[in-house]
Length: 264
Image 1 (tube, one colour):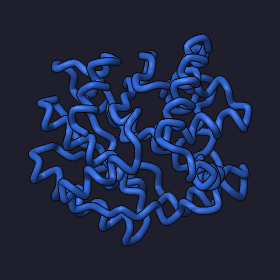
Image 2 (cartoon, helix red, strand yellow):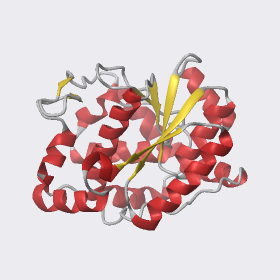
Image 3 (cartoon, one colour):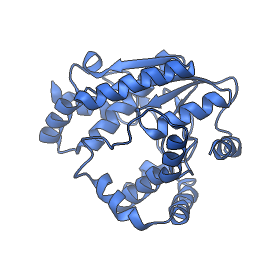
């Protein structure tokens, strides 16, 4: 798998040896594997993990990632969600669901992107690397298509377009299946948890994942590659500054401030 990742990095010109790279860590197999591989390939990597305050689940993941990064010789920056936003993710999602009708995964995704970009800039990062894999990307394509969110996919692919205020996001596992990554992590005997997020149930993404269960990796790749050809001709829109937090946004108020405004 290391050879495949190296091939994706070279083919899509994802990284430069001079880049300061921040890997967004969840504690799962995907982000752990990509951190390990980039370190072994000689890149300048650091880890950035958000402690979502999901009880024992978060505590175990954080403990394992601290040891993993220490053993690998990688600096790990941990953002405490309560210190950052005043509440754990469960309370935030409950309030937003009641007041705005957004699902838990949508809220979590918005908040994580906001914090990762903000803290990656603090860390002086040139690139943010995420552990999104082929299955994740296929789900995104199908979800956005079925919801009619075509423009969301305009800035997709292994290498997100560079935009003012955003640290460029890179996905070296873009064309590698979840199953292959799981096999790699187990072969390497990474001391990590393989359970899904305890909040990941009853959402559109979960239903899409079930629907994709019988898709072959070849079929998933065809779907993703087809979408990338479509996305090349789409405009993702202008980037401005959020009137509330000053972070980059496509509207006057960024999605994170829209969500967090419900808590006030």
